Image 1 (cartoon, helix red, strand yellow):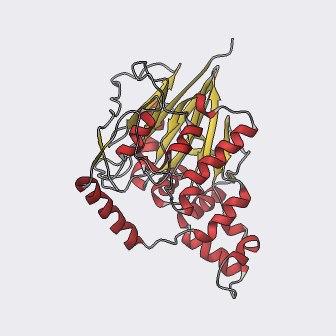
Image 2: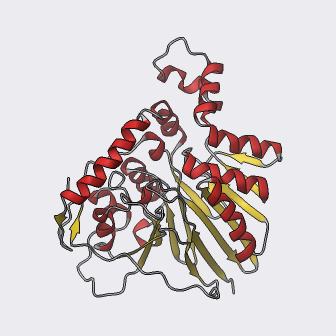
Image 3: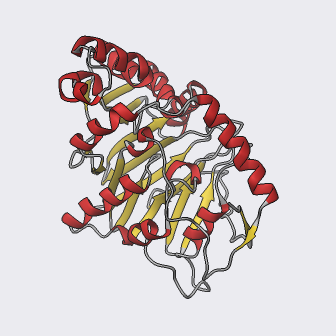
Length: 356
């Protein structure tokens, strides 16, 4: 009889309002174990990933290292993993090798293929550094596009053509505007709270996120009948594309047992219609135990994430939600208990949520 099991660890990233992802998955088929690191957060969280793998998995090897998108709070910690552990394969997008396919999308008509490649390597330096380190160590580098298989995980988004269309839109929003937006959002939450009910939600249908976020790798696996969906910082466009591709493969995403809430619970990344496709419609019986678990990576002292509108939207669709908030959270199946670890407390349903 074949024995399957898995454990998913979400490690804490950040202290203020800036959150990131650092995820480790270990799964087994009989006595064959595989370890996948999906994003590494900051350098500090990368160091914690190394300690965690050595302490709890008793190894110094990672089979698959995956960067979902090039933001520093997802990519920079992976450098530490590459430097300190043995790595089998690296999966990272490399748009700098396709200047001939995207040069016409840039407004500067005088730009050359070489100068565009250099600009992308510099602008996406954290992702490019992963390629450099992998080549130095003779580690195979792959690109995670739709249809690729990373161990038992399948990439549902982005497809290559769409990804390359997104690249010219990277880094379009100035940092000063982003910082001001976060401050404004926080004040809005305090001053304009509104009431929600189980059957009525205020989450908007028109949420939009950055091109970098939409380029996030979305991963799916089914282990012993347990569907696992990991979303990075993907937004509505990417999530709906993932649903389209899953339908082609006859994968029922609504039956997933474990889900990563996109982009730390931002309300810009999901909508009611997207969640209906991804996890199912609003359920009528909340007295029953939830059949699905969702994790959110949120920095310890974040005041902006996760949005209550978003966690409520998952809750009313029968999902139990947990957040890191400075702690490592573990979800497992058939992998045994860890001494000293206690059960995580789920996020409740909120009667008051952020207003517009």
